[in-house]
Image (cartoon, rainbow, N blue to C red):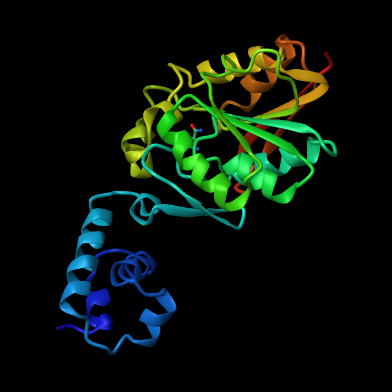
Length: 269
Ligand code: GLN
């Protein structure tokens, strides 16, 4: 039997990925693995680890293999039914939180894993946080994350605002699908494995953003704020859309990579 050092060195994966998956396969912490690199690998662990390494080599995202991803310092459950939470979405969380008044109501439209709603509710015990999604499978994952980190989040099944007649909020936050249907990135990397419904929105990627921005006007209290994530080349179009729809105090914000990422507008009511 090889040692852990030999097994890891033989992997074609990046070092960290090989270690993380080996630790999962062996049922140990990565720190244990690193401290025991000279130990022989047991036959069962070797089988488990090579199966996980093979999945990753076939392109499956690490987050789906592990069933979890950290977001805003919280360990979130993820499944192939939800988009993998991304660091750039933390900007949306920050902006939505900053615009939410004490005791205010916030809606996370198209919550997926629940990442946005759960992160905000976790930080803001005063807030009344709602989250909806059209996908029952996504809601099941969101429920797990809410139960673990923010049990007060009110989750419901809704096709955009269809199940929310008469409900109004101080903030509506959304990371909607915004990739254009022909975008070549869809056949690269993690996107190949993520749900199309969470990624793709028509020929220019703006179809769902348009519907959310239009309909949100009936669901924001006067002075309420819509904040949504968009693609790297959709900042100007997003701002123009909000102007056309009658929002004011419109701003677009760059993410940590300095890419236009989140558009915010105020509904005067
Ligand atoms: N940020 C994702 C990507 O392009 C897309 C997420 C989304 O459509 N909401 O990789």
